[in-house]
Length: 123
Image (tube, rainbow, N blue to C red; front, top):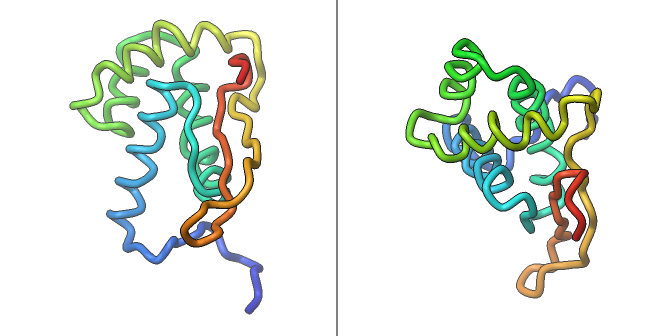
């Protein structure tokens, strides 16, 4: 099976389930700054979360509304942390806010696991 022109990984889920998965995973990374997940989810969540951190570098009403649109209105604590803590922390960094560190295999199904960590946070 060719991997050309494949824009995203589907994870055996429909589009709304995938969207909810990455929304929840992004909020968990924002709140805890370190999350353990499968390697493929870790690689894919970078595509969703790094643009949000770039947005959070500027704290204004338009940015806040864009983040609410992407993360949901009920995630106010995560949005506040993103705007007031994480965004200013990465203000001088041009990108690459997340680090994916492999951490072995899961015991049940031997799936490759990885840590997703903000780059300025030490393990």
